[in-house]
Length: 336
Image (cartoon, rainbow, N blue to C red):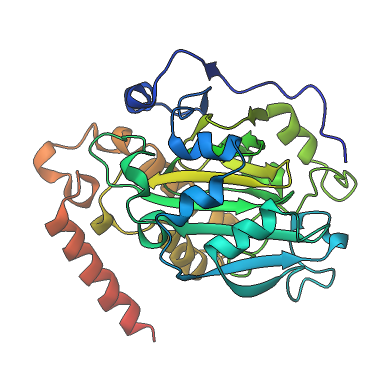
């Protein structure tokens, strides 16, 4: 497999410590790579010495986790099967340390092994005491990801994301949110790990089937990461992730910039598909203009209305959020 040429590197800083990252990314809307910002972590040092599993054993609670395994024919790609009625991998139960040690000793051979989104505080309590990055006042979800030479198709996440490489090399290829149509997303409700993914094979793109993907490539940026590097991935940025070595370990931090009581935007998308998706094209376009005005350009929508009359267009709080939810529930129940 050959990586596409001429994709520019993401903006990179070499002079930022772990304690300074939160300040650097505050209000930022584009990715940034912080070289060596987590190089001081003991787990990074242990990985470089080939003793990562020994280090993690101090914290391991022997709790079960899910392991994705695919045959060598998958070539490391976590994806659908050919008929798209299932996936090209199997989910098997495992534990953290035995799986990690099997990867360290190359027991999987050419078989693909991938473990995603394993909560660190649940499986490895105490690990963050000496291996952590402060993210301001936020309370992040911190997860461990590891495997061998794997690649996960481009997808987006709602939370802000800091990705910290512990072992091996990783490559993130990133696309701004407005590239969504050029990435040809698959089903919203049937996908390998909960998020819609790009249907394009990055290493063998079928431009006859996916012609707009050329535009996505023209807009892409790449982060080539080594142990100790930290990448900031803003909310909603699409990213393809590749593990480039026989053992790749990453810790990531997820946090939302909005309170949990505001709900999930993807729920609004599903509701819009229910109520707007079946309308004639002209009406869908008209509603698209309303969404643009009242949602995307929200500040402009309020500028000519007296502040006391902003109503649901005004700044939300927990009380107004509760009232809106009750109103929606009542309306949905009437249509059942």
